[in-house]
Image (cartoon, rainbow, N blue to C red; front, side, top):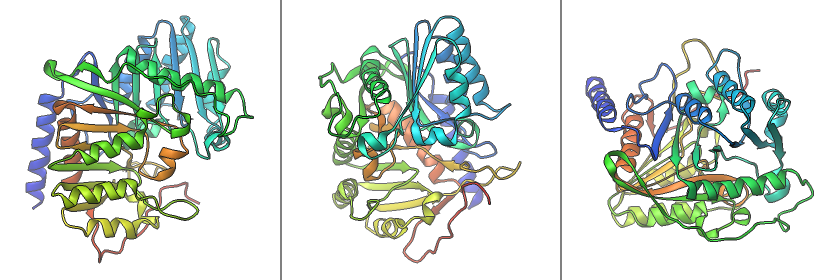
Length: 407
């Protein structure tokens, strides 16, 4: 059995290597934990793409990140050096981070803020909408965007499975730029409340058509959350996800760090859960991967219930610890994406819980592209067919996994 799985993984790796050629307009970008078999040679790694994009900046670089966590000698250090270099050549750099996470990781943000042509701000989304600033994206010269699950964290570049998109398109950069400018304004005014958000409502010239691999026409639409703080409510993440799931006819694959219909503080949120169940009832084959960090969550019972339904399989993935020793908040699959029928997809920064759509800042992209969607499906299958997968069954008892700081 192990030989069969290994052969499947080799085939998938070879397939990805042969087909995942970068497009000038859009490409999938990954990070994979060192020492695992999840790497795809045909997909560029995050650090390479970040360095290329930041190095190409001529006028502006706007970054909105959950936090910034560097470690000397690790892969984020050259990225931060590239930002300093950009500012030294006259690029105007702006950085927004979540105010609560800043308290945990202040050093790199403070250092950046003391450099010429770099300005940093902290945003309190708890005061604004009851959540956090959880998005991870940046915009270069108002024309190129990177968005994905990758935090600005050295661990995200070498010890966590992440997926993102590099996109060259002014229309998408305009949408994300408007969100950045709104948050930049909100970060400077801590007196704002959820009832007093200066959102400039507008409609955008979207979707956009970009050239994917081999000249394929990829139709893309940016998405965002929370609903109360976005310029165009038609671009809401939840709406885009439900539309994608409802449109699935044959297959549906989903991967998140966390998935729960339970609402913090009580109550249930079943919008996405109901859509998945409806898809399965009409014959769509559903597979979902959730990180093993969820083993300590009350949502395990909900995942078991979902996985017991016809046409639905749910699994944890458990990434083995690094041979060099334990690393806190790492060795996990942190990706957030959905693929329908190998033709359409959503990829973003939100986990699948109510607060990420109603209270928390997140960004994403939906797209119709057999090449991009098919590539994401093959990435999913590589995890699904790996030895890291643990199928969730009704009878299985799961032991919570430590992932925080060891005491």
